[in-house]
Image 1 (cartoon, rainbow, N blue to C red):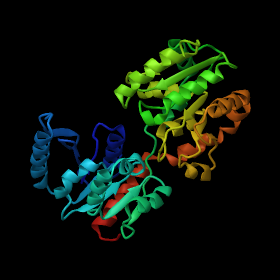
Image 2 (cartoon, rainbow, N blue to C red; image 1 turned 180 degrees about the vertical axis):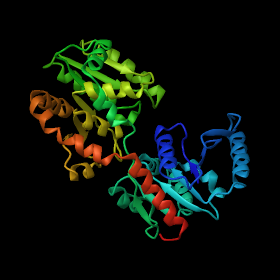
Image 3 (cartoon, rainbow, N blue to C red; image 1 turned 120 degrees about the vertical axis):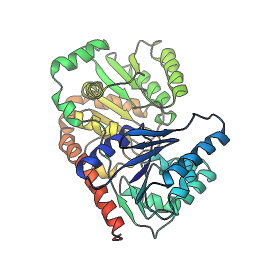
Image 4 (cartoon, helix red, strand yellow; image 1 turned 60 degrees about the vertical axis):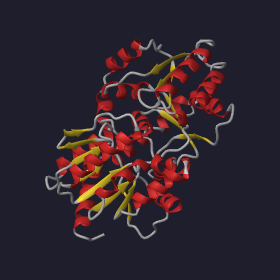
Length: 373
């Protein structure tokens, strides 16, 4: 089994670990950029070429080396246009392409060339998988290929949900002391990464409006990964906005352990997720599990959560005053809404079983090799 995926992604690592746990029938290797891994060990690495021609030569060298390996199935995780460079590895092999979200919702819309390259890779696919039912329709609208089999293979949230359950009160209080969060503060978490499409400026402006009525606001802005330039821009924006009006906040920019992420979820009263597009945010699901009141953009495709009975609030659009008004409503009704949110814990737990997710992929691999799809 050859993965073409980002080996630095914690989702990739988690899935590989679970796949090897539930089945010993497959050996897994990974191509990640110009690096090649077998059984978790780095076998080959390019020379960090900076110009495009040198990078292309490194990719070609890697492809020649890997092509000599016995590969039954190639599984592409996240369809980047750059995957077109690996087409020679797809010929004569079974191919699965798994869409994660923005590779369908954002990348094809950026340019015709992006979509053209994605379609060239899709021509080789025997099976397509997506992370929710709504993406099936979106796939056909975007790329066509109505004749190709397409399945839903859900990705669980990354965090170990049991970590949230195991947190004691002393750990929570220690976390609050670390960030100078006071006893009666309402803790907000705005977004979950350093991505311009998370609409940080809008959220900051709305919290400023909210602070006219509530002085006990504390805001976290998690920006531990993503666009470094955007992170610096938002840090400066916070300085000019929050500091000027004495709104207390912290921009989280350093690596956070699983324990720290669990604590962030636990102390958060309200999590705001109004990004442009998303398949299903793991950070948002973790927040629901931890008991936070989540405010999502109504345009985000989370119908399957509602079908499961989950509760969250929404705003219809990113216009001045709308989020501030919703935040005010949630704060004024926080006790009742916290009670209402208790249904989310069981729903999120049921949706996020890594063993089940891995077994679904193994079943798919077996059927593909047996020509039963």
